[in-house]
Image (cartoon, rainbow, N blue to C red):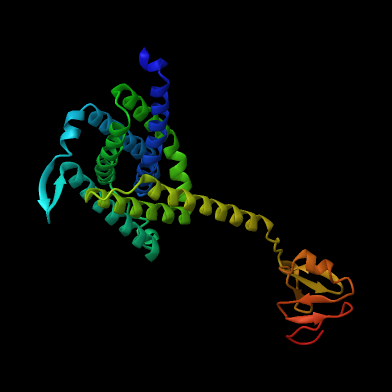
Length: 303
């Protein structure tokens, strides 16, 4: 009961919850990219199973705090640098994430994704890759939680709520990444950055989370502005109409023209262009001529 009435506990809970959500975003992005390789009917199942495994892994690690603390003890040394169990897991996980993200970027740049559209990944292989990264991300998340909060109940509550939020948002995030190739490329570069930071952590070179997630947040903002600008440009583009023949002063649809006696008018000239030619001058394309006072000269041969 004291936990519920303590302001310090609520502040710690809110801070840890926010941090767990931020740390879980890269997990969701990775799961979304991997599940996108499955048939559409299996993608939602893979996302749900992957995030459920992440939650179970986090809870098991939280309930094994003595084992977590023991992971910080050095197992061996390399060039005078002690390597603990935690360092080893972060190193291997960072290398796996770095290699996987680099491979996906190469596939994206070379255009092999469409060439392999008929070849989908197996459900078991995708879940295996998700489980490997779940362990790495969960270890990083739990160690962060242990360093911030002393109460196990607070840590469990923050982790469960954060994973619930991730579970609800995984579908929309996956759909958004799939619809926008530039966002997918941006997400893959994030995974490269996170993999490099995990490797640095494995070598006891601590990188503040703000240095990693700050540029990521800024890049997301810039990409969002680019998407909005692109959508606005597409909305303001002029409408292009089908070409018509002008015969005896009256427009005739191309399909209804019985002879080539008329002059082809390119209707891709915008409405504003036609409105601005009130003096009788009209741009004629397709036959590439210029009409003056209603008379057209076709480049193909006379009026």
